Length: 96
Image (cartoon, rainbow, N blue to C red):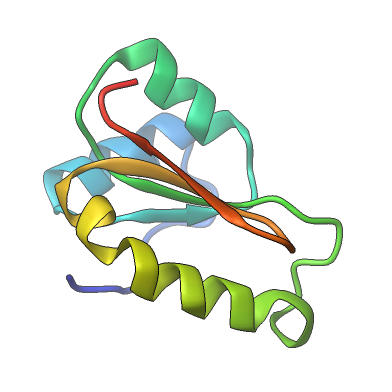
């Protein structure tokens, strides 16, 4: 799996999702709208990695994010919504 940060910071959520799907990338976000978009679209991708916490700074949540990446890499490669919070991570295989 290839990870990168690209694109226009002013892009709409739909533009981000379309680009990620076309380029086989995972969307990594704190925005809850991406999970909703996946559920409403019934699509099998792109995968979304969603962080849910008040403090999303790397020194607070970074270790949990890295652990969840390793645990769910195969799910993200095949199409999933992975939600990571301070105490656990959850996976929903796509389509939802």
